[in-house]
Image: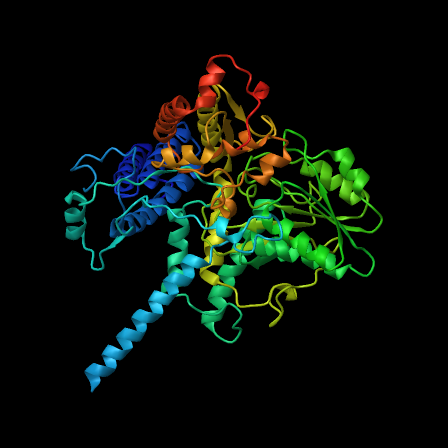
Length: 99
Length: 482
């Protein structure tokens, strides 16, 4: 994606990225990592909600894309080594966790 | 023929593994405690009849595919045992997935020795190691050349305390430390005492902080080193390192600080605080276990007598091949810690406030350590009329500790709390809650509920509590001797 793209397509792109980050975060089998990934993603996007500088937006989106590929790798590893559920954990609803 | 050979091999393998496990069981991590405390080794072996989690911890599925992931997800775990909430972040922290992501490439493709100068395998790991050094240095405001990688904070502490003392031993024979230091500093000082050094163990005030005037008064012309930790591992108090650094610089004494619990959690600057040596540990900041660093100032130069000699790596201060995967992970952990420090401290402070407000609202609970000069991620609270160890047993669904992990197997009260002047009963009833990056609000609420419930339960059982409720002053009781 280049900085010359229209604001509308940037917005769509950002939403898509946000949704896939949240979806991937839910795949962590470890409770604490899952909750952190969800919280961190939401807070990061909320903090940058009113960002107007195109360079800063671009930087943020690149970072988010890198995070997404990291999350994809790490959630698969988390799926490989499973541990018992944690005491406060409420099971993620079926269908949401595996997309 | 071949079959019998295999069988013999298998047998010997079995025997070897059996002897290995017994050896592990006998040798605890803190066997050599005799220099510091008088506890006997037999006291240091804790056995529990009921293991916390019975099933093997991990289930490894080698060939994982997208389809297998789905099956795994829907499959109910056979065992219903749940894992406890982890609230022992001072002992160690979980490895951040972002750190593991960086480390894995060094366990798969980038396996070169960073000291190999003759080929690309060495160059690429060398670049990664130097990059990690920059990240570690940035976190504490140092120059990358001043970072020496070690195996952890214990090695760094040993290297600093023994190294400085021994290098300057012809002229200077005196070391100052505090009574609440970590055991590895205290033990290094005991060793130096055996070698003929003079060590002053500064007492602390009842809030856990050292008295600066007393420190200055104790400095002698032959003092070579002052070693005071930044954040205490048991009570979380932050020592006034800026002021200590100033005093040490004024008297031309080297200042070493054990920053294992502080680096990456509170803002630190070695130049602003005039720190000459600092110990750093990776596994306290969501990095890998088995790696740490020692900051050694170059200007004015601090000279050390190295403990490990050999190939002359790390400026000759710590020889041995660098563990590139661990160092890369350590560097990434430092980078994340610096980047996320404002976000993490906001989260940890909020949880800490929620937890300590809830705990201190209970009857007869006391916070140990200073309430203001305090790292929020460490909340140490004493529950009067409850025995700390029995509370820990009652709180099996929460992973907690009454103090340092090294001493958690002994039933003695913590020497740190005793140094604060807490009486034995209160020191016995203290519990440390460690909050970290991955702790959630739900966990804190669960902990508050569980603690309230079980402290009440245990107090109901206690005859002392009954007397307190009846208004009998416990001090006035004359206990009969049996």
